[in-house]
Length: 324
Image 1 (tube, rainbow, N blue to C red):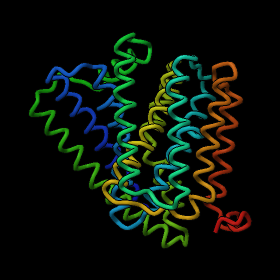
Image 2: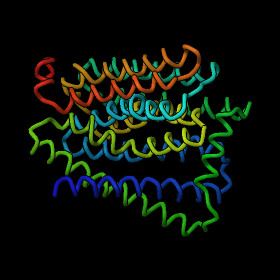
Image 3: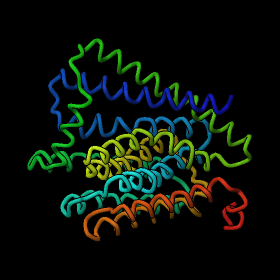
Image 4: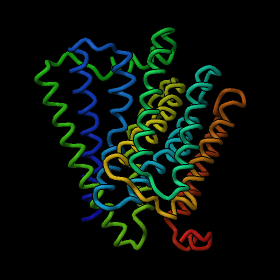
C-alpha cells in the first residue's frame, strides 16, 4: 500500500507539473510575454516544480534528509543517469562558448552548496543568497541570449512554443490551478509514503530522498533528454541537465531554506555532496576533452550511478564504507 501511495503521489506530482507549465505558459503568451523569457523561466523552472514541492513538503514534514537528499540526489541522477543515458543513445556535443558560461556556473554553484553543507545547515540567509544568485543568472542569461539569439536562445523559444497553446485565459488559469493542486497533493502523498517506506525498510529518509524521490522527480528531465537524443538533438539534453542542476541548487535549495531552514544530515555530508561534486567535475572533464560526451563516457556515467545506488540501497556496503 505504501508503494502504491508513493507511485500515485509521483504520478500526480508529474502530471500536475506538466499542467502547471502548460497553463502558465498559455497565460503568459496571451499577455504578450516574450517566448524567450517564457522558455527561460516558466518552462525552464516549471519543469523543476516536482523537485521544489517535494523538497518543501519534506522540510515542512520534519524530514530534512529527504528535502536535501532530493536536491543532491537529483543533481547526481541528472548527470550520471540522465546524461549518461542520452550520451549512450547519441554522443552529446557542446560548444566552448556555451560551456564556458553555463558549465562554469554549474561548477561554481555546486562548490557553493558543498561549502554550505560543510557548515551542517542551510539557513535563511544562505537561502536568500542562493535566490539572489539565481535571479542574477536568469537575468544575465536572458540578456545575453536576447542580444545574439544564439542556438540556446532559439531552444528556449522553441520550448515555449512546444508548451504553448491557443487556450483562452480562463481555461489556462483553470489548468494552472489544477496543476498547482496536483503538484501540492502529489508531493504530500509522495513525501508521506517515502517517510513511511524509510521507516519500514529500516533506512534513513535521506537515502529515500537521494534515490526514489530524486529519480522520480527527475523523470521529466529523463524523458526530455532521451527524446532529444533520439531526435538527434543531444545538445538539448546537455542544456537541460545543466540548467536543471543550477536551478535545483539555487532555486530549490534557496526557496526551501527560506521557508524552512534545514539541518544537513551527516550521511549526506560524508558521501553524497562529494558524489555530486565528483559527478559535476567529471562532466566538465568529459565535456572539455573534445567538446562532447561520448558513448563510452556515457556508459561510465551509468556504471558510476549503478555503483552509487548499490552503496545507497545495500546497508552492509554502507556499513563497510563507514557511512552508517
